[in-house]
Image 1: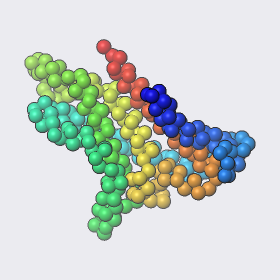
Image 2 (image 1 turned 90 degrees about the horizontal axis):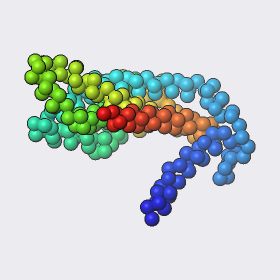
Image 3 (image 1 turned 45 degrees about the horizontal axis):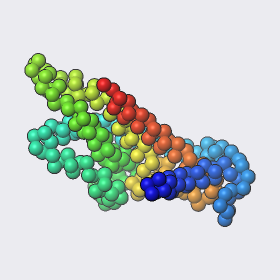
Image 4 (image 1 turned 45 degrees about the vertical axis):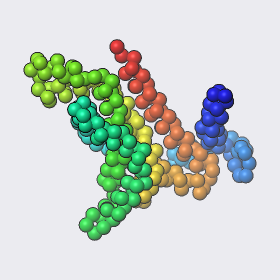
Length: 258
């Protein structure tokens, strides 16, 4: 029973990906289950399309900027939530943990559209606003990753030992916490980048024509040649898959450490 459910679930996930891979190297594909012929022209056309190259660069800029902002915000936030939970203030930690599920991304996008489409703040469609939205959207994921690692390592005991030796709070944070969180921070940032690159809803509502991200341009590709759209989607899948593999490898390496 369990194997059957797993098989059906696996087919449900993998069959669309397999069809995209076939379609990206197929020739004509109209009203048939599989395309006819084989070609690599779609990937060449994708490489030569300036709008996709520009959108790809925009996505990378937004993702890297979101990672930088999250690094500055998530480290002290996770550290504060960890110690707050130890002092009985676990409500804030639970709220942060639930935010990715409890608050839909589209809610954030609509709120930004209302606030930043006014004479006082006419920033709708600007790159800084898009970066800020991606940073806020992905911040809970990185914070949860760091918070889970802090709980697993139980750094409170190490901090107490360092305090008895005369280390200040800043010295404890930079000498104990930051080195201990290095791998979890890196794996969390990889996840943040993957989420940011693949985010469509927020980007579609907040971006302008000049700052379109890769998923926004990708949607428009499906109104044209099917093979071209499949090739563009495969590129996004490869990026997401590589990011997920790297993130899981870093987490596993962290677990294997003595």
